[in-house]
Image 1 (cartoon, rainbow, N blue to C red):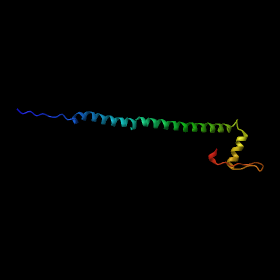
Image 2 (image 1 turned 45 degrees about the horizontal axis):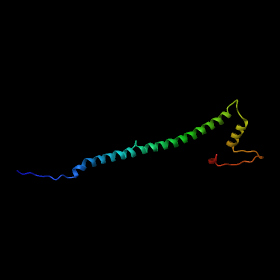
Image 3 (image 1 turned 180 degrees about the horizontal axis):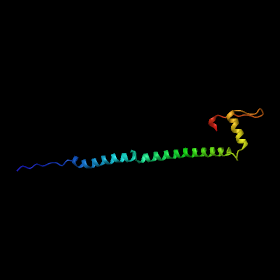
Image 4 (image 1 turned 180 degrees about the vertical axis):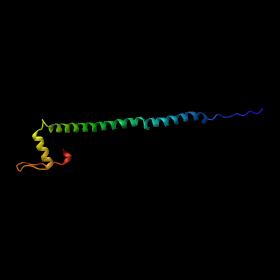
Length: 107
């Protein structure tokens, strides 16, 4: 009777753990860098903060424009506001006035 003796190999013991490590590495990478991952969450939160800042600036500008328009309605018409707007539109000033021209970006 012939018997074969096989020496146990260590490579067979490493196949399952190495596959598990590969799968965990793959899913871990995509959990952090994926489209809905942790890094994307932080990036979206930073973008939301920036957009909220822009929204606040636009709201402030809108309120200021509403205030200026309110000053020009009938019944509450202020002559100084009307005079200022007319001079600005026509680019006119009196001879005894000093005109200071400002660039549009500093307003």
